[in-house]
Length: 181
Image (cartoon, rainbow, N blue to C red; front, side, top):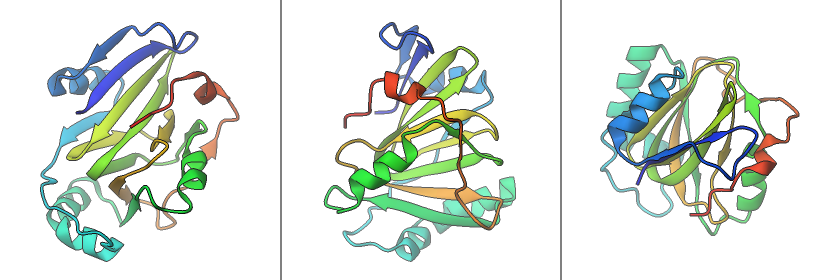
């Protein structure tokens, strides 16, 4: 189930609010410029599905998002619990960073957690199958796939070089609860 927990950035032990209602999550995130929507992600992915298989299964979503938002390229991040590089992959995204373009993701399998650091708050957004999240350019954030990652996300890019993170050097992510699936 998708959820949103809002924390003061100085005190992760004291949440300001928690939401599980989709409309409430969308309303809270919209107020900080984050697009949060639902898409049809009901097509099951077989074990061993390649990036091409995932993109073919969800071509309707890819085409619609590219047409609406001008994305030039897409890829798939799919990590299963038995991936020998899972721990290393998790660490890559656990540090606060920004991007020089919007970061749009559609979760088509499993779940993951985005942490958005906006002004003096951190928005912890658990995204599950069918969730689309678009984090605006320049928003400080990090992503946690959990200790046993099991997800597939279609990632959309304007830039042809794909994912480029600009790390802030702030250790804020170390103070917040990790995503434990």
